[in-house]
Length: 241
Image 1 (cartoon, rainbow, N blue to C red):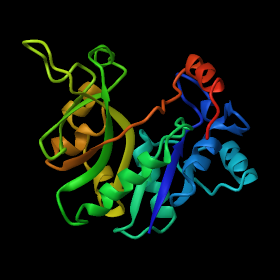
Image 2 (cartoon, rainbow, N blue to C red):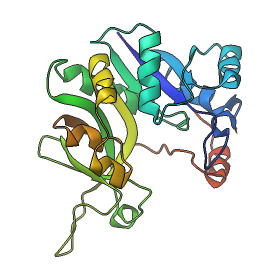
Image 3 (cartoon, rainbow, N blue to C red):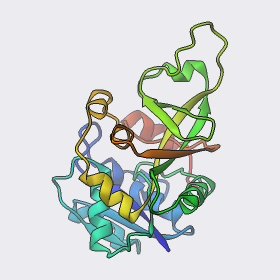
C-alpha cells in the first residue's frame, strides 16, 4: 500500500494562488491529482481552507496542515502522520504545479521505492531526464550526477560535471518528484539542515550530507512545473491528458 501526497501551499511568493489557476477544466491542484489518481490513493496536503473546499468539490481527498512548514516535504510528513500511514508504506511526493506529470514516471518511481529495503541506507528515491548542454547551463534546472548504479552523488544548480575537455553529452536534469518509505520520510524531517542544502537551496542535499543515499531512475517526460504566469500561459495551450 502507499499514497501519493500533493503539497499545495496557497501563498507562493513568486506566483500567489497558482495551484488554483485553471488548467483546462480543472484548478491546477485538481488536474495534478487526477493525473495520478489511477496509480494509488491520493491526498492533497495544504494550509488553505480554500484548497480544502475546492478539492472536496471535485472529490479529491485533502488534509489541512500547518502554515509554518518550510518545505513541501515537511508538509507531506505531517499529512502522512494525520493519515496514519504505516512506517513501511510508500509515500510519493508529486508537486501541485505538475498537472502534466505522466503516469509512467510516477509508476517507475514507485517501483524504485518498492525495490529498496525499508531498513537500508536509501532515504529518498527520485528521477532525472537527459538534458542538453544548453539546458544544463540554466541555474533554474537542477542537475544531478550519479554513480554507475544510478545513486545520486550530488545535485547542483551549477553545471555538473564540469566538462574540462569538451564533448560531454550525458547531463541529467533532476525532476522534482520524490518517493519515500514513510519511516524514512519521518527521519528526513528530523535531520538538521546542512550547509550544502542552505548554500544550493536544495533540500535533497540534506540526505546526502547526513550519509544517506538517494536512488535515481532515468525517465522520459515532457512535463514541466508551472512557476510563473508565463508558464501558466504555456500550460493553457496544452490540455492535461
